[in-house]
Length: 378
Ligand SMILES: Nc1ncnc2c1ncn2[C@@H]1O[C@H](COP(=O)(O)OP(=O)(O)OP(=O)(O)O)[C@@H](O)[C@H]1O
Ligand SMILES: [Mg+2]
Image (cartoon, rainbow, N blue to C red; front, side, top):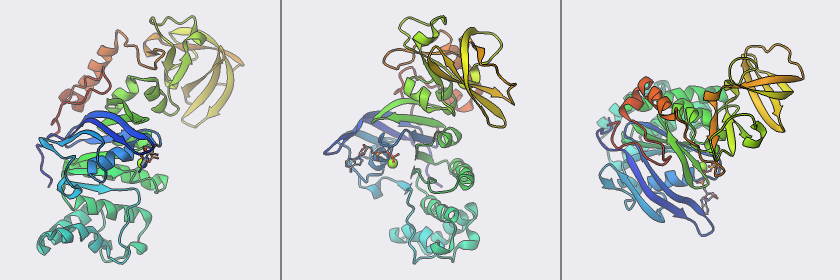
């Protein structure tokens, strides 16, 4: 089993510049030990670059990386006590499943008997026991993926790094593998750093999500807090399917908003066509039935706004009155930063009282980069 009781990973002012561009412009974050952290953001935002710096495959241009009390950014990859799974899982085609899984241990000179014990345990855990003598070409994509995971797990390193490991699987298998990886991480108490650009993957798997954009961190929070209290317009527009409506303040002239509000946000499921709240005249532009619910595209003073109704919506007239509950509104200033609401702290408290992770790890995320206190998972 991996050692526990360490203090996770700390990134301090990490910068990575290439000849042509700066990929990371100063990353400060703590990733707690024994927890599942996800680096989430659009293509090109610097996720893989950050993971490669943690792994030691590239060197930082500035800043420090710590694992517990050890500074690791100067160490070679093999001295960093971590395992990696990449998108292209690159199994050796001429080796059997067992040989592929044990390859790293053989190289490290781990005793045969110990290799056998670990192999049996990992193969059982990953459902690979029946497949150990096959070659990779005789496996399905999902089975190959599990071999790659087993190869990382068998090393019993306390930190596991994964870069989009499920991106070439079909939707059903991806869903299965998500829960398998999550269960494995919890069972082994691994400190996981998992890269994805898929917000559903991030929301379903993570204890902690680090949202990145253009080489910077936008927000660090649990999935629930990220959804309930996005700190920037970018995060608000990135999380949720469909994401939060971001409406120019000018299109909602009658709705009260704090001084300095440039954009008003409201999630599609928080709007209704009846009920309490600020009432706004809207034109119906499009109705999309999804089965369990219906998306209604509205136009409010030139702004396109999506409303989600559960169940089959009754046929709509061309003009309707949309209702925006005051306590469901999010306000952002002209720089795209959240304007704190008086009840923001309260909702934070409520989240905390429901979520055992938050109880143990109060997240002071008024500053989006404030890290989770170290070592909480240990
Ligand atoms: N070796 C390199 N030389 C120059 N620029 C690079 C190099 N590697 C990455 N970059 C640039 O750094 C930025 C971040 O790249 P990175 O691969 O980290 O993105 P990513 O978030 O992993 O994106 P994706 O989701 O597409 O994998 C990009 O603009 C990329 O073009
Ligand atoms: Mg990448």
